[in-house]
Length: 395
Image (cartoon, rainbow, N blue to C red; front, side, top):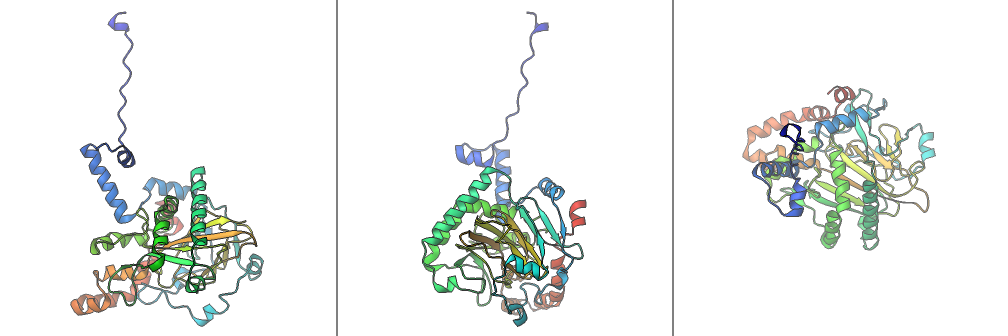
């Protein structure tokens, strides 16, 4: 065969760049350029959590099915002056808050039923078109469903094996054991502090270390940008820089704190989480074995809406300013929940340059005066973080 008729050599395939996870698994060192990119990715995730690419957000928006809830205007939600926390619940708000209401009762009171498969994304927009909550959904794959099932069984088993004190089983949110974990900052604290769970610290660490629980947490954080420009993201790099040793409950989740609501049938009372940031997302995930068309719904009182909430799904809302509760599940069914949030006091700490209000006033009176002058504008600024559907669909 002459050279003229020799078959051409097979085209050279460019070697794919190894992922950071592959390098960790094999132990082989990265080339310098790959090493720099991996370090940059790791730094970004450490500071800001796992954020979706713009193309992923665009795909979510294209597939989303928005729903208007004209009875609510987010501007009227009860943020306190300065908008670092919400207003304390009034006696009128608390009246009847511990009454468990069935789906039929709520519909009889004029609540709008929002059917939801727990998969497709459905942003909820107020009367002005501002997205005030997001039914973020869940991945459509068997691996996710298996992970959620394992997480549920693990949390349930850990809860069943724990003797919770009465104060953790009877509280303002309901009659079930609940445990907070993570970073806190509020009245009486001079700096952000990791919550001391005392004798239950080993339980907290086991829950945080479980890979399926972490996967759920990371997905909830990943879902945040749909409907909100990411209020929680603006705090994290500053907090980590100004407070050495600070960590988040889950490394790829941007939220500073989490709550495990143990079963067997979690049904929250009507409440607001007033210490959270008034315009910040709270991520709620339901788990268990129950019929989501008959019970387990999320009730949004200010919107007069009741949302079907299947196991494994994620809903995001500003829990400090939107009153919410659950419809009870049927006898024999099981439901637990897992939430992530960030205390508003952490934002104040960052805005004050890593200081308390008293320290700021003493150390920098001019800056303190400027901060006080901006208080009345912070709620308006906070509302600007919520996208409108037009902004999302045209971006």
